[in-house]
Length: 213
Ligand code: AMP
Image (cartoon, rainbow, N blue to C red):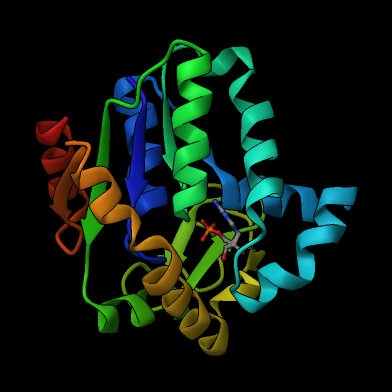
C-alpha cells in the first residue's frame, strides 16, 4: 500500500507516518528529513537547500522530485511507503502520479490530518529532539521525565529545528495555505482523500487513520 500523509506543518504527519511504519511495515519517506540529512552531510544538495529551508519556504519542485524519484527506486520501498511532506505542490502531485504509473504502482489513499492553526504554532514552537536517538519531545505536551535527560536513551543532548522559530513557522503556514492546500481538491476529485482529526491523542489518531485505510 502506498499512501500520502497531508496536512500543515505540525499536524503530526511525521509521528503518524512512523507509527504506520511500525504497524503496517510501510516505509516512511520524509522529504524534509532527506533534506535535513543532506544538510548535515554537507552534500551539494544540502548546501543548495540550507538557506531556503531555514526560512520555511519550499525547495524547488525539480530538486525535490528528483530526490524522491531516486529514493523510491531503493528496495526498501517495495513493501509500500508513506509519503510524509511530499507532494507539497500540484506539480509535485502530478509528477508523483507519473512516477507511480511508470513503475506500475498506485496511490492507495491520501490522509489529511486536520488541526487548527493556533494549535500548530504551539506544537511547532515547543518541539525538540534527542540528538542521540531521535526521540521527539515537546516543552509543554511531552517534556522529558528528568530535566535534560532523554527518557529513551539516557543521553542529555537535544536539538531544535531552525525552521521551528516563530518567524519560520509563520512562513511555513502561509506556504502551506498557498501552495499545498490546493492538493486537497486535487485528491478529492480523484476520490483519494480521507480526512482525519489530527488533534486527538496519538493512539486515537492512528486508529482513525487505520480505519480510513
Ligand atoms: P518538513 O520536515 O516536511 O516540515 O519539511 C521541512 C522543510 O523542507 C520545508 O519547509 C521545505 O523547506 C523543505 N521540504 C520538504 N519537503 C518538501 C517538498 N516536498 N517540496 C519542497 N520543499 C520541501
